Length: 191
Image (cartoon, rainbow, N blue to C red; front, side, top):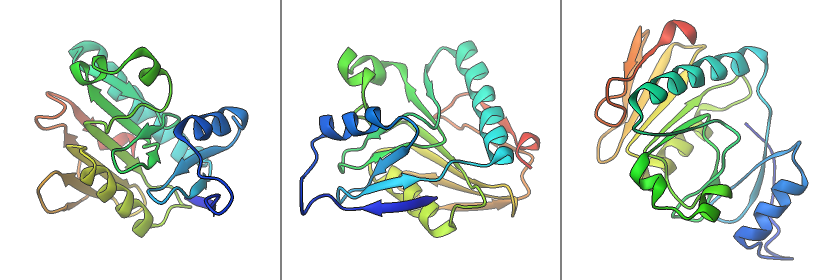
């Protein structure tokens, strides 16, 4: 959830490097930046959500080590999307050749690339509307598959490029489809 948002544009239009340095100078604050350049201060997650994020990320990491098809990222990773926003999904994955096409400097900072896959796990402080808007933004910027998981309602929204959002209830597992071959997320670790 966004705790606070502020617009520096009347005073300064931060470059990507300046935004990166702002984030580095304030490591205890999780920043995102929207398409208008507004700086967003994000709320930390609570214990249950943090645990579920960790468990989900662990499953992705194990799958990725075995499959060796790409690179996984946690919620502290910022991605500079084509629309100019810098976002940090809870879990992200990029196919290896796309990641390798970036320079070492691009890989080190907020990588200028939309992940192939993103997952957002709703926390009690998140609003559904904000999180849905984030998923739509990801898809509009080149993400191929996105999952919005709401553990309270047991709903999953699946976002795919050039398709309507699919809403499913009380799933046991989610398939990574052709984006994450042979990956299956057991939702028992979420619910």
